[in-house]
Length: 248
Image 1 (spheres, rainbow, N blue to C red):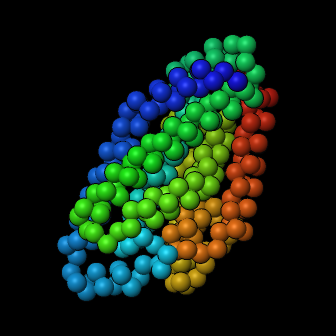
Image 2: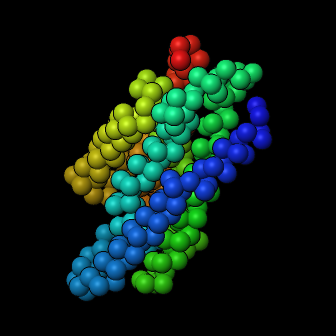
């Protein structure tokens, strides 16, 4: 694997509009949610305080995870589409694969570039959002807020793998983003509706998108982690095998 090329991929992602928009929108989400929490009537504040899971970093985080997750899914799918769709859209994929590099090495390099870039940008965005919330609302535990964001990485890697699988089949960024977002949103709504029907219950370990709620609520993670890891490996493997055998 060409590490120099991988570093160039990462550098390109870090200075891209995709990265800038992610951090800016995370900051705007944080300002909006923090102001909603800060200027809510006392009765609503009390209700939110009572509704938040015991393991969360505060009321802000409780609302943040519920509302921000939908945008986060789009960000993830955009970074996942980077693996092959960006090159496909630029009609450069065939040229890249013509280099003396195996398809497996190509996939590993592009996947690592995408994941590492996202992790850096997501961490910066989280620190910015946490700082904004702490300044406006207070009552937020910034280290726990950051830790919870890092702990949901298994769930985020699953969304990466799902996006990659769709990208192999659909080839273009537009269709990949639509399919990936629809599938992820369906999984997200599935566990949300189940929690609404039975508040306080544990979401099914079979739903990878419920892993983030488990982290925030301080619920057991081991079994859910193994399920998410297994599904991620299956999706990456299936997509990788399909890509390796598919004509470009």
